[in-house]
Image 1 (spheres, helix red, strand yellow):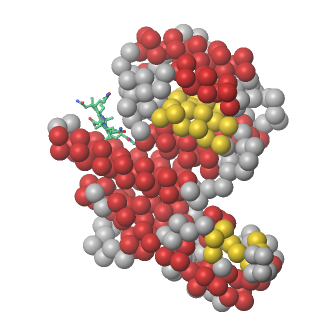
Image 2 (tube, rainbow, N blue to C red):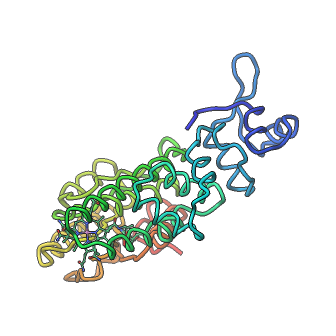
Image 3 (cartoon, helix red, strand yellow):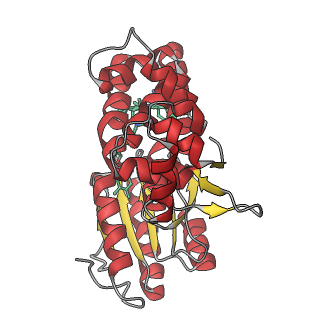
Length: 299
Ligand code: B12
């Protein structure tokens, strides 16, 4: 993805006249800065925000450095639904097509949570059902996971998180090797304006606590796809919840195996969620709550 483009380039990319584009920047519809010579320049994340908000068709994605989108759009062998297409791309290791398809949904206005709870989740679950965990299955699952990670990183690169943004920290617990769920959570929270720090799989909960303390995090997420040691995990989560409560921070727990976690007590700063949509709603509510009220339930 490019960093900045000119109004002329963006005009060509979305199929409008350069004069219209310049007028929109002057009216503040598209954020633009000026070069030392006085020429307008548009940051690509701002161009993408405009395209999403106005549901504008991106005719020439390559101008924004999004050639994957062009590749996906040009695929004539494509299956009928986007989910079926994504499934075929991930199964067959077609990384540019998969990245392009996911990016095209985002450009068309789908939220990150909609994409992750929808096609990404559906397709990964389908892949899991299709193969036994033999060498071939593992190869396909690792490859599909890696392609999804590339797509998520591309989406994240279009987000601008301001300096001084509130921090969210998260990961998956020890013995849990799953990369994608925690990464999706980080991307969703970045989309909500958090500085999201993803510690990833196999993270000791004490490390999560330390990271939350060091960064003064308002929100901690925990993604559980494997609950191999339930008794130990529930004790460690209880200790984390307690430590976060003292700091006025909140804990949200989710993931395929989170439903099996029975905490020894109820913690008013801790809740369980099943989807990225729920995480986004919670994170958004927390930002809307007055600072210092991290312990209250967001609306
Ligand atoms: C990829 C994969 C692997 C890869 C992981 C690669 C990696 N490093 O990430 C590898 C090959 C390593 C692997 C290994 C194994 N796997 Co595996 N794997 C999968 C697969 C296909 C996809 C997982 C994934 O990324 N899902 C995508 C995410 C997006 O979906 P999700 O986790 O449901 O997340 C959604 C929600 O839960 C929620 N969410 C997630 N986190 C959070 C957090 C918060 C805070 C909130 C609010 C919400 C939330 O939002 C997400 C989006 O909607 C699944 C299939 C499946 N059902 O998921 C099997 C699956 C999980 N694996 C399974 C198995 C059996 C195994 C192995 C035991 C196989 C073996 N015999 O070795 C090992 C165990 C590994 C271990 N150490 O424990 C089974 C589990 C069955 C069970 N009942 O427990 C599954 C379901 C496949 C199947 N149908 O049999 N696996």
